Image 1 (tube, rainbow, N blue to C red):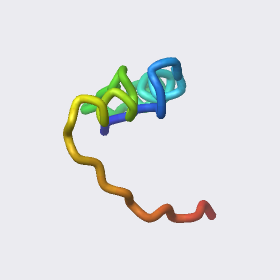
Image 2 (image 1 turned 180 degrees about the vertical axis):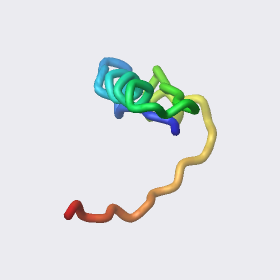
Image 3 (image 1 turned 90 degrees about the vertical axis):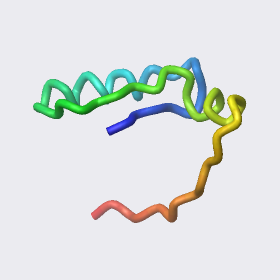
Image 4 (image 1 turned 90 degrees about the horizontal axis):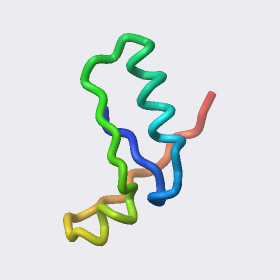
Length: 54
């Protein structure tokens, strides 16, 4: 599982990664730079339709 925020100043994804590890997930990655950093580095992105919460 890869967790990331929208910007480099956001720590919510880091906290979510810690919570996932504490829940027992073992393959957890935190992308520190956020989606802004990813886009600036050049790899493609793809929008995924959001699903509502129930």
